[in-house]
Length: 215
Image (cartoon, rainbow, N blue to C red; front, side, top):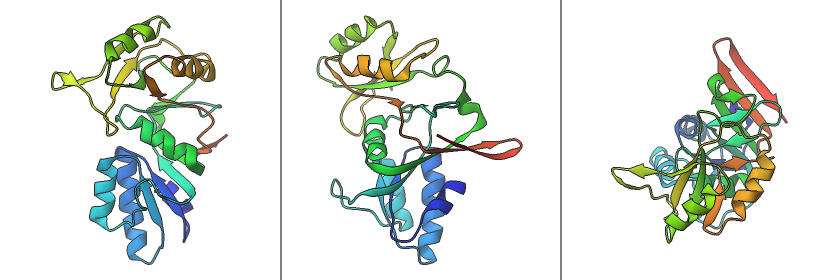
């Protein structure tokens, strides 16, 4: 995995959630077995469990040193700006905390995730407080973002942090930074799935090979 080759001895590595994280943990486990000395900060309980199972060292919960490198995936990447939509896996709050704490963030995606404009068929996840979620949904509607509460097994989805997620549907996100600011001002919103200015490199896998995009 191209991103894992960036990991050096002694690093603190942030690990995302989803298929990209699974590949990264497996690749890191192999390097750890060969003598690589690192500690990792997982962004979900699922990633934490996999790292622990494969023998990848974990930093103490909530008490890690500065993160040198974050490896994660994305649901959409805007070409040029490298602004991301993340959160379809339900771990956007922890992912953004770790990404914001890292010195560098490498995002690994396939070519279908690269778009000229964010939005369209990919919804924008917004993590909201479970208490009074109906009112938060109504306030989101005033922005015209068409929010819909995420439901699994006929019950509201609950994140690792105990929150709900509103999936917002927009035809196009023309100004991600402005939209993020507007969403963040709504009472009940905890975090948005817009990752602005966080990705330093995007590794894109396609039919013709690997492309590396840098901001």
